[in-house]
Image 1 (cartoon, rainbow, N blue to C red):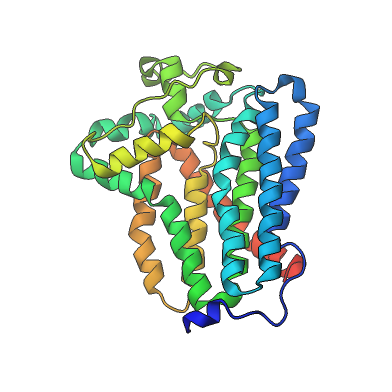
Image 2 (image 1 turned 30 degrees about the horizontal axis):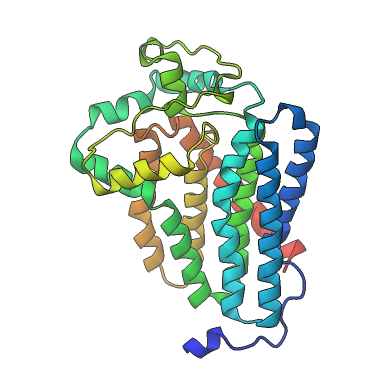
Length: 319
C-alpha cells in the first residue's frame, strides 16, 4: 500500500461515534452516575469530573478532525487517542473502589489454598539474578508496546479488521476496569507491606477494610536495580500505579487477547514474535509483586471468555 492511501479521503466515512468511542462513553456515563451516588465518600470528585470533561472534549475534537479529513490516518488517530486516555481511566478505578472494603485477604487465601505458599513472595527471592530480573522487567515493560504493535499490524495489513481488533482490546480494558471498581484487590506489592511479609509467610491474611483508602506504601520493585528495564518499570509504577486492579490481571488478560488477535493475522510471524514476550509478561506480574498467581489464572480465563463475547458484540451491534 502506498503512503498516499493512508490520507486518501474515504468515499463512505463513518458519521457517528466509532464502536470504541461508544464503549468509552458508556463507561463514562455509568461511572459518572456512580460518582453522584457516592459523591460524599469520594476523595477527589472534582478531578474525576475534570477527567470526564477532557475525555468528552477530546473525543468530540477527534470526531471533528475525522469528519473534516475522513481517511485511514485520522481513523487511526481517533482510536489511538482513546488508547492513550486509558492512562487516565486506570487511576480512576482507585478513586471509586477505595470506598469499598479491600479483598486482598480473600485472594491471598485462595493463593495459599491452591499453591500452599505465596509465589509472589518467593519468586524474586529465589531468582534474584540480574539476567532474570531484566527479562522479567522486559516482559512487564512490553505491555503497552505490544498493544501498539498488534493494532498497528492490523491497521497496515488487515485494515478491514482494525476497528474490530481495537474494539476487542479497548472493550476488554473497560470490562476489567468495571470489575476493578467493585472488586478492590490491591495486589501483593501493597498488601504484603501493609500486613508484614513475616505475617504473610506464616500463612496469615488479615482483612484491612479501608486501609488502602489513604495508604499506598508498596514493596520496592525487586531485582537488579542497575538494569535498564528495571528502571523503566520503577519509573512507570511511580507515575501510574495505584492500589487497585490486581484481580484478575488485566496485564495477562489483555496480552492473551493480543496473542489471540495475532493468531488471526495472515502471517504467523507476529504471533511468534509476541509469544516470548507474552510468557515473560505473565511471569513478571508475579515476580514484580504486581499480582498473585491466581490473578494470572484469572487473566487467562477472563480473556478466553471476553474474546468471543466482544467479537459477538462487535459483529451484532457495530459492524
